[in-house]
Image 1 (cartoon, rainbow, N blue to C red):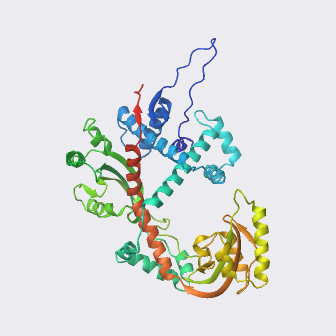
Image 2 (cartoon, one colour):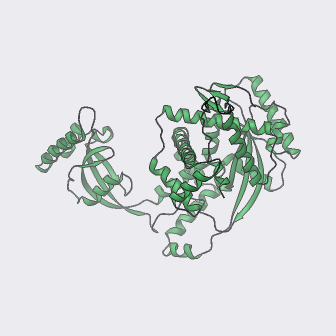
Image 3 (spheres, rainbow, N blue to C red):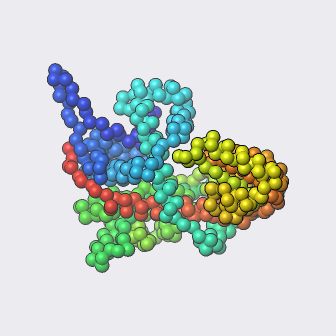
Length: 466
């Protein structure tokens, strides 16, 4: 019941404390790898080997030799250590509320209250509630770091969206939105059986070829990719293919993509997967990042899947009520407390109620540079565009009226509502959904490239193994 939690657990790195002289000496945990200014211990590697073995056994896959598993375990731990170090330098922390929510969800999945879950973990040999909580925090920090980095690296342009909308997937997205907007569509969708979705369990090997690689390096990596392809065509698993090269495939990396529907795959893998399903021989796939080889490990059909596309709007309409809004923003700082700013905004509010020009005061006083130059004008605002406090105040303020000062996470505001209109947002909704799909397709490839860059730039010193 509890072993499945090991996939979440990252072993703690704590050196054994020296025992009193009368006690039997305990073996000292040794350093396995130095990663920049941090370390990975042998106990960490052993715990990860146990996790990898368990996962392979659950999939009924062949468990490779211990030496190969040790190499995979060390590389996983190195990447995790590098990401945690980078997150720490960027001030990324776990959110206690989100961590508690995840732990409560885990407890519920096991049919327990959080207190019972804690007691069971603390009484189970080899784990504890504290270690599970630490693992959830670590997972959350890494995910936040990745989301931030991918948002900086992945750019979906209007041209990308236009190109996507011309594909069969884009046509289907358009059709689905039209179907959702028909009267009674939500009721019909709830009553109708969901279509089956094909999912594929895919593993890939990547051989990165950097843009600045020399001709000699490029030729060697191309040859490595060809040799891995030959091994794959001989029926070898990803692990066996790398192992068959006897240490000459150090640049190659195995990536388990998990269960994916076709529209959840990186776009460069879709056509090769279709050819594989059609019985074609394995092939090399070239991307700007290097070479890819894919293994179709398993396939399944889901009768009642979650929607693979982004969810429909809450009501069968794309028409929203927008309001034209101006605002003045002032932020607390080292010289002005929140109460000081509140008093300043109260004085401004009095001036505005006495007939002062809102746009002029916004240009002179507002600390929102984007809108201040336009007299505080934020344009037409849809429900949900702003933070909740701002959104609520827009709804409470009459057309032509000025709000009292109110606070949000950005500071203190005064807003004025200048007008109201109904606006059909169909095209905007369609583009947003297309953007989400394209972002998801690009995410895996870009994440893999970033992780390889992070690894290549790191100081890593292997200190041997037991």
